[in-house]
Image 1: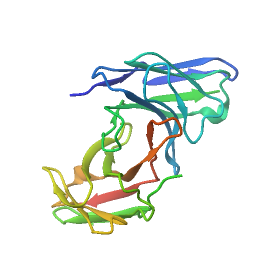
Image 2: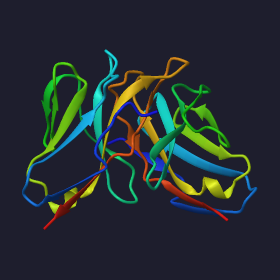
Image 3: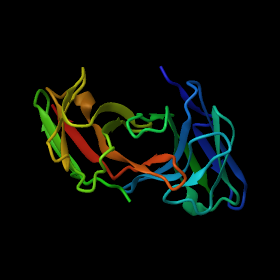
Length: 114
Length: 113
């Protein structure tokens, strides 16, 4: 089974802090994704990457950046955390570049910014 | 924006068959239709995927008409543990060649005893 591991289940950070959310997948997948999930809004795509050092903006990239230095690791960075970034963050990976490749999700990181 | 539209919520009783219909009027020729299930405090989990006609696995069936503008997820004989949010989605090409998958708000299914 594909395993997508997010480094923290819960995080509490202060406004203005730089925050790193880490995600690792163990199945040599090309594609990795970061979503955030908020009540009533579903999952919204922040950034995705289809290769090492490649990244593309999703629907809500403002306030975030990403890093993919190795194929198995995809990091989400909040340069200066704000309270409106309090959310559940979900990382996912998929094999190949075709739209029929299912996503495999981690269990999420619940971030609270105070 | 999500390319799919589905009901916000549905209720059912244990043992019934549940059908959740999703519309995707702008589906592209190469797009597959994929359904995910999400329980509270977990990431979504892949259920089933199809391109046309009917697909069946051990969990569900997926019916796709010839025009592919909609699809129906069918859950046979639901149980309380099927209470979850169900997402229908199709793929979308990104600007740099990669693809991205856009989720809508999903359908919240509540199964009652």
